Length: 491
Image (cartoon, rainbow, N blue to C red):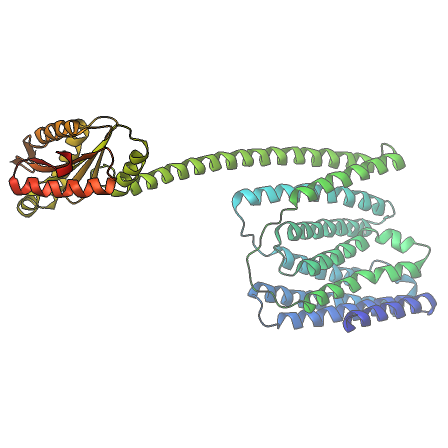
């Protein structure tokens, strides 16, 4: 066991024995509390000086050290007062109780001061979860406070019972926020332990009238040492861990479970109070809390369903947008960006498919614009691009639906004719030449474009062989200025 925690437990055990047998149990109890709180203060200052931690954690432990000093002062003052009046060791003492309350409040404020860095939708859901749990905690505080108030006769005792109830609620708020959002400036184990210690201080305030009137004073004095011991343990738990890096808080996924647990506890409290007291004011308060918790759960579930619908709708929109983007990318990968015609990759794929399915031969026409470089040099590249677009559109109107027109690059186009004979290919070449040679007005100039076409057709030759033969025939047509030429094997 850790030596600090072991020493604290040893002090607690020795103090408990002395409280049970010594003549002045109040002095022993409050001095033991002062020792625990002084140890908490020392550990807090050590944690504040720790290297490798964020500024928020350092500031928290600095505030915790100040709170520890205030708590220690309150416990020492109670011990001194117990020396003068041993019989009133459990009674409410205004100044020491104020010090203990202020110290607890300062520690709670430090735990709640850390801002949230969560999306708005998640923050709203967490607020619902916190509200559900806090209303459930309020039911328990109501029951405990009303039970404590029943023994309080003087206004001061009632006031301290109310202060204790507020402390309990704020401690529950700090605990719930830390569990649901991981936003506490300490580790989870230390945060839970510190919140529990402050809650126990609140229970001490709420039940102070019952504690004073308790027949076994020594047992209550032992119990009142527990919050200080737990507070010391919380600081030590944090010290035993490595210093964490400064990271933003992250939301936890346990919100719904915590909320439903709060509903269950509220229902149990209501059933127990109905069985024990009947329709008493305490029972009515538990019933009201149960109704509020149930209503909050219903509203929360409605909000969750609405959020889920929005998420599903966004997911559908995202999937549709990705599908459209995928289609655009696929189109861009297989088509020429200038003319919109299939590119060389798409042309090759169609030729491969055609080679496996064509039954009555196939033909390839390779077209190259004549004097295209002259157009680029005299009118500019924009005019050349416009001429390519016009040519592509004319080619589209010439071919059949099953044919494939592609731009292979530069001013070179290709037409793939499935189930076509040599005569079909020649007829298509005549149609294309007639369309391409029509006058076109570009950038204020009337152009009379011309083209040379190489034709290759076969029932058995591969597509690559046809394309090479068409390329040779095209250059032959250019050399002879004949408009088109047939590859030798197609003649």
